[in-house]
Image (cartoon, rainbow, N blue to C red):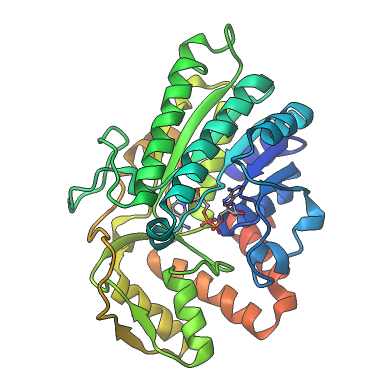
Length: 362
Ligand SMILES: NC(=O)c1ccc[n+]([C@@H]2O[C@H](COP(=O)([O-])OP(=O)(O)OC[C@H]3O[C@@H](n4cnc5c(N)ncnc54)[C@H](O)[C@@H]3O)[C@@H](O)[C@H]2O)c1
């Protein structure tokens, strides 16, 4: 029922995705294509030939644009020309360690990139809904054992978290100043939301300094995986889970339902709040190989405990996670095992996992 509604909504719609060459953006593009949407993508080029964007042949399936979102003129020109109905803004420098090495690039991409996307939407006037993707790391972390709520204060210790918290605040300012729900239908025709998700895993991610890709690379090279903070607890969720949330949100906003504007958490159930060490051991068990080395190198600051409260998404949007941690890890490892054995199966397994998750074959 929910899938039918999503498919009916997105069929024939023009959807702009920033960050479509990345891990989450590629999965989102595949889902939207399977719903019959026309996808326009803006990103930097894929990082390597192994990226899911490349191995699943997405470039020829979408209207593909390669440029930096810090280039405001190009974004404004593209959005004005293509007049997308919906925008999903995912493009970002998303890595914490990289943000220590390149704080300025991280800040300018994540903050000014978001300003540019919102400004292009404001100037075009054609976009009906926009979902800006931030992260669980936007919350001022108090090392609470319980999940953060949408109304909790934002903050950020490392440059990545700070940049995403700033992007979140910028979006809220645009929402209140230019896309205010109370003025919808009179002064403007755009509704805006922010989506905050936790540690997202799934097939096809080769990002550096990310746990699952690190385990896969180590297993390939026959080397132990090096863990920095094995005791840190994270909310692990399969990539399809938050993406379904983003799509549900986009559809509600696109239908003019103003109560869906604002911030939303999409995280897994508490049985999926596991330590980095536990997840590593479970993935290695499924892979049937692997060893762990605990790094003695001085690490950068990372939180020990960070989880999300998803009551709002469950009660108001009707979203709830479908996978438990075992299913999340099984589906993830199955993707890598299949594609590592035969690269030509990347598209088939991606589409099959989407079809199975959304019940598209029924
Ligand atoms: N993967 C996770 O666990 C996770 C968790 C929470 C939030 N997020 C957020 O989800 C979004 C997508 O993350 P991902 O995991 O797919 O990352 P990714 O690194 O795989 O993809 C990032 C995408 O952004 C694009 N991009 C980066 N800088 C750009 C620039 N200057 N101009 C244009 N495009 C640019 C890249 O080309 C790529 O398409 C990000 O906003 C990230 O902060 C990710």
